[in-house]
Image 1 (tube, rainbow, N blue to C red):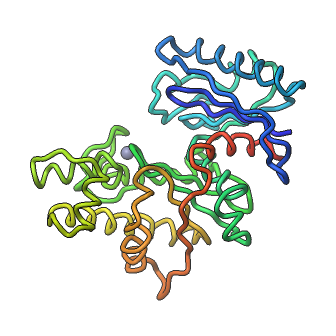
Image 2: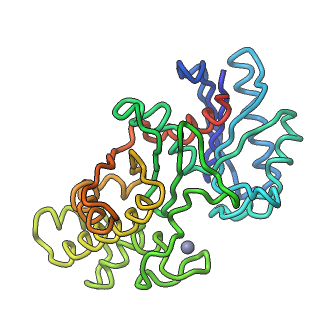
Length: 301
Ligand SMILES: [Zn+2]
């Protein structure tokens, strides 16, 4: 059986899958993270959840995959780049292994998303021969995960696939990471809405802006969506030129926007170092489950 836990800001979710070949859900449970009570408390919540799952499935795990909001630094063995800042700098892997008395495999949420969609989700159902899969989460932030032949590419610094903080355009301004013009500051949901506000002085939800563009009713909405698809294309073309994925899976709230798959792909075509673009762009299939399924897949072999 494969055990996985997805550590979120408000909830911790656990799943036990029958096997990698037959990922039937044996148990699925969630409890609140209660992160306001601090790091130690979160560790004890994870321990509590694992005990609840063991009781239900009638056996204990030998190893658990954990999806975290941050990345484990291969050198310092501490978590970094997490927007839930209480994890940053903590030796999370060692601390948790000591409490739960078993080894864990860790990957960040975007890597888990990419792995789950590659092995159990839309890639498996629609493009099973894909070798290189790039999974994107475009929402409040922008993240990415690279899966090659069913394995996450973590890289030397543990930042493999971290597309959201690639340089894209100065117009994005300063990012929380300290750099200027990151992909995230140009095409995330909040920054796209902010761009619309800068044109109109009005705050509107991204969905509304998309609808106004679709109805051809608001030239600033059109300008905002055209900007989004242009920069999406430009940003993803860099990934395509380097790892040349068979499939790009676009998750997250912004990833639902159909224009990414039409105008966004057309824009990418302009920037890619090839006359044609055969990369397949797919919508994810697993929804909210991708994080926890991907965590379980971390212990698949
Ligand atoms: Zn950044």
